[in-house]
Length: 287
Image 1 (cartoon, rainbow, N blue to C red):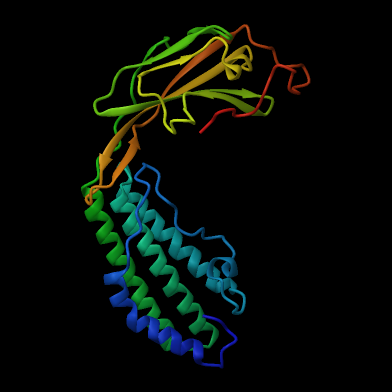
Image 2: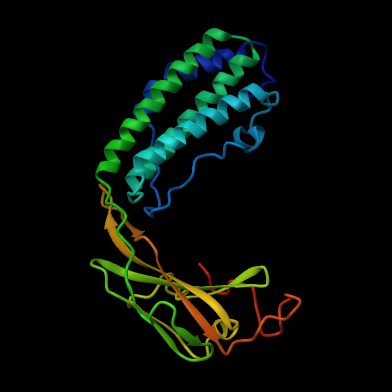
């Protein structure tokens, strides 16, 4: 909807869209989600109005921005409250994506009506927005009830929490096997020079993490030799495969396990805090 139309044209467009919205809501095509525990986010509340809407109309006013912020933030709080503790499935992602597409259309129609001071259309937009939101929250509750809860963290059985590890020697982190897990993720982090360095077991060629619950760092792994003497933290997850209601396969992660270790034998940080020749703050191989 562009503002280079004749005055009043945008209201006609808005009325047509409002009239068609119930049918659109019932027939909107679904968009499959990624199926991970982290959903695709809705449009950012603070984003540029013109960039989001691709509209040649007048700039969004402060009052319009405040209204949009309030609506998005309030709806997100309700959304998070419903899905908290559950895996984000493709079915949940479809419901969420479809809602935010419709909601942003209605919000834009409302703004166009405000620009033309047509408060009757503004009122109709408000009614439709409330109905759309109520429908979304009801649908989200229904699909969330069928979603598995995010499993607890796996157990890191070895090395023991607080153990000392020598940089440049082979180290195997052992995770107690988790039922139905098809992959295991391990990442060893260390703060370095205002940044961080990481090793993980992601296999770029296979586009997956290891299938074994044992995560081994080889002695000659270039990422391993760039760790410094000092503290490091291991994060681990089990990854489980499941299928959505329409048979689409997706993966989800358990909650994260965490162990702290003391590293020895690595390059010591320079007194100035600048990276040493051996040190690195890059996240080589991170995913």
